[in-house]
Image (spheres, helix red, strand yellow):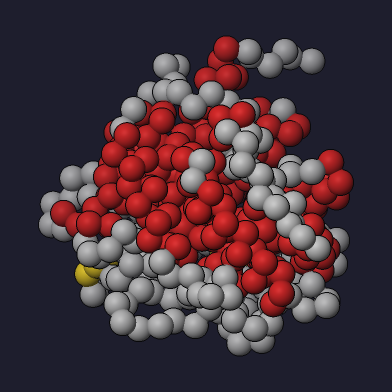
Length: 396
C-alpha cells in the first residue's frame, strides 16, 4: 500500500504526545519542588555534556563514574526537554532536544532500526526492538516541535521496521533484551508505533501495534498482574517495568476511539497499585504475580512512572485521590535527591535507582531515566494541582 506523510503546520496538528489537556505554561499555584525539578534538569544537561556526543549518559555509577551515552533513553528525554523549555522559558533545552533527535537519526540503519546498548564511537550495536520504540518517542516529539519532516520520516521508518519484525502472534522474539523473550512491557513498543500513525497513513504499523497490544492483553491475570511484565518471566517485576506496561496500554488507548479496550486493562492494574499505596503508604520496589512486594527497597524511577500513570488515569476518570497518591509517590523520590552533596558533585540533582542505594534496581547508580521521569512527574503534577485548585471537585 502506498503511504504518504502528512505535512500540515505543527501548531495545528493533532499531537501524538501525552502531557494531557493542560497549558504548557508555568504553574503559579504550585511552586513546591521547583528547586528539585531544576536540579534534575541541570543534572540531565550535564549527563549529555560528559559524553562528547548529543546523547545522555546512561547513568552515573558510584563504582565507575559517568557511563557512555544511551541512545534509548536519550530518545524519550527529548519530549521532557521540550516541555521543560516551554514551561520554564529555557530555550536552550529545546535547542538541545532537537540536537539529540538529529543525533539519533545518524544511528539509524538502512532498514530503519535503531541500536541497543550504549553508544561507543566506531562500534556498531545490533538493533533493539524496545530501544527503537523509545527513540521513536523522541523523533515524533522533535517533528511536532519543529515541523522538520526528517524526524517524522525517521520515526516512520523505525516503526515500519518494528512492524516487519513482529511475529504473527503479535510478539517480538528477535532483537530482545533477553534472547527469545517478548516481555509485556512491549506495550511501550506498540504505543510509539501508534504515535507515528497520528501523522502518517501507515495502516500496517497501526494494525501491527494493535496486534501487539492484544497479544499482551491476553496475558492479563484476573488480579490485574500481567505475565511477563518484568525483565524475566520467573522473577518479580520492578515497578519500573510494571509502569512501562500500564503506561503503554494507557497511552495507546488514548490514541483512538477503537482502542478503549486497553484503557480498561490499564485502569485495573493502576488502581490495584493505588490501593496498595493507600494501605501501605508506599510502593514496594518490585511485585510478584500475587502482588507480594519487595518492601525493603523502593524503585525510585518506578515511583515516578506509577505517579504519571495515576495522573493520566485522573485525566480520564477525574478521581482526585489519584493525584494525591501521585504526590505522595513523588515525595518519596524528592527525599532521596541531593541538590548539594558534600562529596560527589556529579550526583547533584540526580535520582538514584533505588532507595536505599543498595536496593536491587540499579544498585549504587543514578540512571538518566530516573531524572527524566521525575521531571515529567513534577511538571504533570503541577499542571493537575493547578487545575484542581482552580476548579475544586464538588463533594457528593
